[in-house]
Length: 317
Image 1 (cartoon, rainbow, N blue to C red):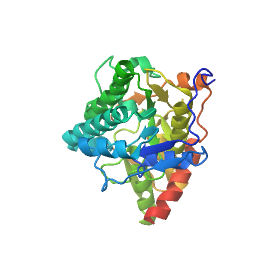
Image 2: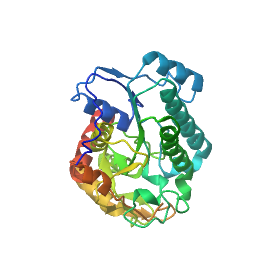
Image 3: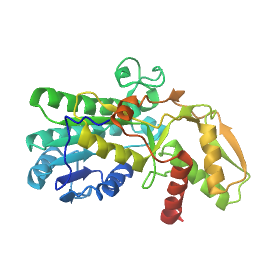
């Protein structure tokens, strides 16, 4: 159950969703509609560069948010992380540092920082508990992004320890949903497979391929479930340690591809490209912490993929 000794009221508050155009940010905006907040703050990248420290400080000081959901980040799949390591580590470090410090300086009441399950060691014991952080080497294909995300959650803990800031971090599993990145090379596996299956169906192709062996195991959560969990934590959680957000269910990449092919309606063959990496062999989060507080996800993988594919067709045709 939620901690009845701590409750943060969102009703009437001024809320800034940093990264509101992204997959998770847009889901948070949708979720907040039922919370009775006073004012929703959003700002586009062209108006505010979150890697610009001075600009972020000024904007936060002038806008006066009561609570910030920090969902802004530079994200991408294995190929993007490998190709642009400097961009991934610099931009994500800068965004987190600037927003968290500006929140402290402007006396923001609460900040909810969005991490990533890639922060955990490549060979962490499964399912992965929050305490596994920094207990082993990272997965090399996304270590740049992971290091920046580790820094962001440690910053929240440091500002809480030194200044008493009510800043918390959540660690979601692999996410997917509306407004995901469907780029053929730089996207994560699930949206990439949706795009591949859709194009294969359009072209009446004989087959579609997946990277690696297809045996790697992954856990996926629908972005709207993640947003619901973040709002839940904003109201009922206040502590140093980050909180895992997962579904407790894992699927092989091959199984994911087969589910997507069925939903899309592509009846061709599925082939593997062994020249491509599998990435981390298995990654399943232990989400008992939030489950004991009374929160569980609502969306099945099949339902979430179907909803995402419906949005993809509306967006991209």
